Length: 161
Image (cartoon, rainbow, N blue to C red; front, side):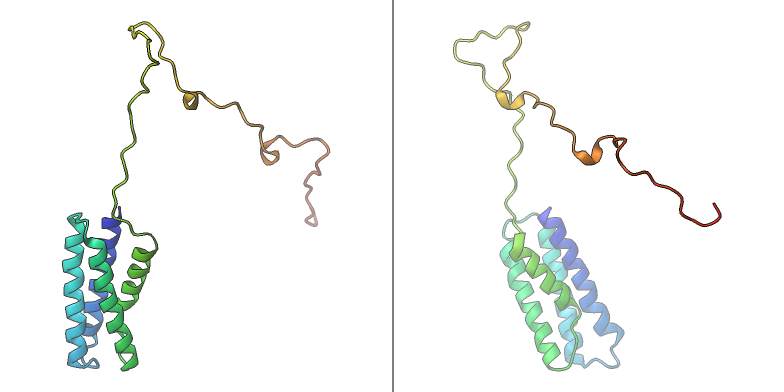
């Protein structure tokens, strides 16, 4: 899941990093066009790397996005806007706040082992652990219970009806 989210953000960042400098080429200095295209190419390469499920993607994303955000800040200080840096900052925050590349352990489908000394036969019932027993029914919350007769009733207050 982490790999897919990161790769989608990186592809979006690549599009934004390339399209704006190229679309406004008449007003964008050549150096910033090169920076935008270089960031876009880096985003595409990193997105393809992320799709392979490489466990080293997290440090690579952090390093690349730090460079992308720094380029955006330098651009803003110089009077130029680097649109992919906003997506880069968002991706960097997402990776820092919860982006983990550790795969979750699969749920165990194994049934619990029978107690020591028990003989397993095809017709004998298997003892279930206490956690498998259905809990007792909880009382229904007040909001879901049928209204009592003491509750106020709605009436039409519109004139002429």
